Length: 131
Image: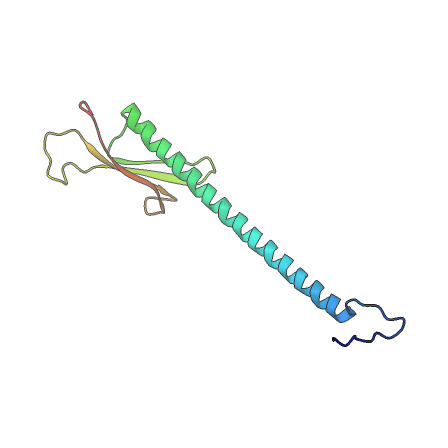
């Protein structure tokens, strides 16, 4: 047999005020933490999206010049769609490799904010006959 707990007359079962305040504090803390994590992920996602957009744009800049046959050794400058400057550095690496009588082998490097800036896109392309 289990003894029954005696409840004073007029008292009700339930939570005390202290228990309710502790529960509310825990819920509030969890909500604030979730909002901070959400804001952090949003900022990181925007950064990744901007980097992908810059990379796509840089690839388009390089391939357009390659398709038009306008690649020449040297540097070219311009601006991304967000207004930040870029520098395209083009060099023929065939002579460096000791290759003679071959079409150019272009080393292309597109950087942000000057020739020594962050590399956004880099590749090597072999020009066809007639260069």
